[in-house]
Every structure is written in structure tokens, then in C-alpha cells.
Image (cartoon, rainbow, N blue to C red; front, side, top):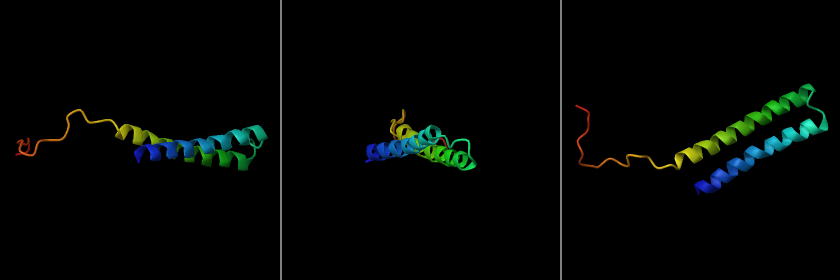
Amino acid sequence: MLAVMLLISIVLGLIPLAGIAWIVISGTMTTVDGLFEILIMLSLSGVFFLNAFWELRGKKPKPGGPAKPGAPSDES
């Protein structure tokens, strides 16, 4: 399930980048509308790639493992 979310996040992060490329190719980058569209699409890509980064980061196992139930704690 996590792999599917990772794939969806990456695909949805790449779609706005394709839109930015289209705006640059079509020549509307220098208009106010084009600039704001680029800003919005960069924000969308950033959110989805940040989500993908967190998904990848969360998959790594923790080095210590879970605590044993009967182990004494440092709290006093």
C-alpha cells in the first residue's frame, strides 16, 4: 500500500512539472498569468515530492528496534 502511495505522489509531482514545461515552450512564461501558474505548479510539485520523501524516509527500519516490555526506563 505504501508503494502505491509513493508512486501516486511521484506521478502527481511530475504532472505540474510537465505543465511548467508547456508554459515555457508556449511562450506565456513572461505574462502575469504564466508566472502565477508556474508558482502554483511548483508549489503542487513541492507538496507531492515532500510527501514522497516522507514515504521513503518512513520505510527505513529504526536501529534500536522496539523496547522490551519489562525493561526498566530512565525515568525516575
